[in-house]
Amino acid sequence: MAPSFWPTPQDYNEAIQNPSVSIADKDLSHGVVETNALGLPKSMTGAFASVYKIWAGDKAWAVRCFLSNRSEQQERYRHISEFVLMDDLECTVDFHYVENGIKIRGEWFPILKMPWVDGDTLDRYVLKNYQNTELMKSLLSDFHKMMADLTRAQISHGDLQHGNILMSPQGLRLVDYDALYVPALKGKKSLEVGHPSFQHPERRAKHYDKDVDNFSAWLIHTAILSIAIDPDLYTKYCNGDDNLLFRRTDLAKPDDSEVFATLLTHSSSHIRSANTLISSH
Image 1 (cartoon, rainbow, N blue to C red):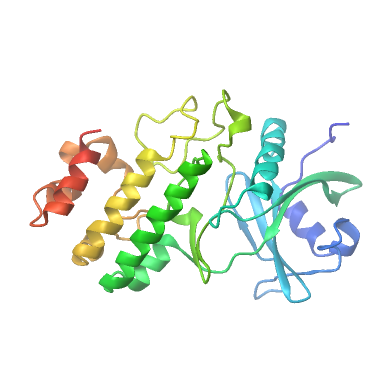
Image 2 (spheres, rainbow, N blue to C red; image 1 turned 30 degrees about the vertical axis):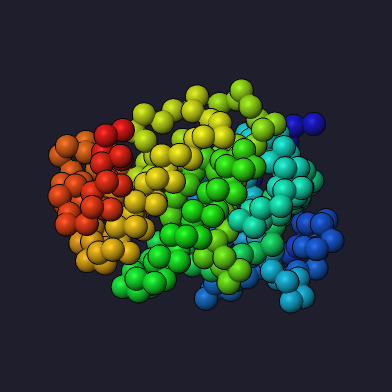
């Protein structure tokens, strides 16, 4: 039976304070939600979900609560979970779609449950290490391996960007699977088109298959490569504008872009050739 309402972020905040009452999952029901300085549940709320950290003993879990009733998204998550739980990829994080996940005002709503991944997002990692050429080269190598693994598995993330790539103690990990493509979803359209500073300007919902990460991957490769060769590029163009060297305006109008003008005339042939491929697409 469809729920008579859909929870707000405040509803989730109130319910998750008492997991023994609101959550039936055995790993979460006796856990403790992480709180902020005011003692209230600490959440990361985006366009589609609020994410909480729950400690159960010495293990931390990420609990993702949906902000809208998108039945198709929930069905997709079942397919994605089935794939991820069976894959052998280092970069994916096992998760479970729990249909009767959290109870609010007597009704059950779905959640996603996955182990909490510690680490810096890609942009924070680069901020800390952009002047260390060896670490940047190692990051680039790790990124290449991750993308090769995704290609081998014939899947794509769908929203490959700095906030969805974590550098954990165990290596690169992908999070936020709202747009993840797996073979069971062949023929469907994407429910979102990704971060505009990391997607081709002509990306549309119909672009949803195993190759949808190609442009984003080359963009990230080019940014890391360029910064590894010339760290001054980071201080000049990574200005906290929710980007990693390139912005959506650069991608939309490469001929008018200052960053492309700089990179296409750079003294490094590696930087020039990598950026030629992006600016010509």
